[in-house]
Image 1 (tube, rainbow, N blue to C red):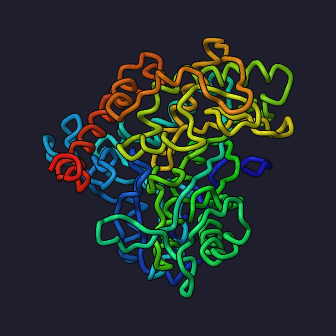
Image 2 (image 1 turned 30 degrees about the horizontal axis):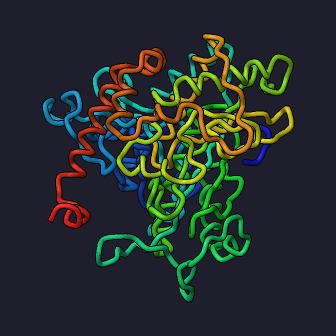
Length: 462
């Protein structure tokens, strides 16, 4: 992750959303439609494509669709969680545009704009308690009220795969060009791998620039055909999480336009490294000075690390939200213990080598399939927990981490969800009502996954 001055806020040339749209439409007369979407608890974008002639109304009235879309499963299907979606008649909410988020979606077949929305109750106009953007906003506000101003940057890993499935339903890597074969060997940090995929990466960078998503670098990762894209520091956790979601949408959209598919699945290949969501966090004062790099900063950093250690296992249900997520923990450089250390990739909480202005903690536990908003909410809750209670971390790991209480790690999805829901400490920062609803959703999603007989079952039980 590159260091540099953090982006402080989302900018817009018009405070009035209707004026924002009018200015955008005048500047982009080629646009034929508007994608208006919310961000659900999985980090997916769900909404409607609105015809151009109806787009202006979105900025006046919002756009109506199912409010329970926010708490749907990974496919966008509802499970009547807490009686929402079926028992209550599946009422609509109003998706209201977030100011400053109108932009082009450059990869679409027809010229299309997009806008991020937040779902509100149609009558009261209040935000829903199960909105992941609100969950994160509430934790971030509590941090600021305590004098802790988080600065965040995200890193996301993914694979490029062939959109066509094999005969047995499994997936294969994509070719890097029309006259090339799929990659056959790992090319970790290879500039040749970057150059071979330069056309794809350049389109991602161009789309990110059009959407004001601050991409700052791409690397070839350990996995065959795996990449990581980094985002710049942002002095607004909500904006940082939005950037991560928008980057995933960009990467998937550009890949599809190129005849490939991008997957952020945590463990798409059992014999290859998994995909992670690494969160880099520092704490500044009200003037934007990094407190980790100033007098007393080491005490604050240690307390933040100790809070992450204290809440790590309680938060695994958010960092690893499905069956496949837990396969990632079988791989190399994926932490199962609470270890931390300086410049050490084998630990859960790494302190990267940096100057004092860039001193930060890299939280390495979450998979790329986790909700960036919920994962970051759990991380900020942990920091606040550590600082408020003056916690002290374990001794930093030297060399490859092997301990740190890994035997306590919740080894399966149900254990992780139960521990999350039943955590008094986590429940002090994230709504217990939400944690219970999230647990219910993910258990029902898991049941839906196992509704059909899996091919592997025949090998075991026929």
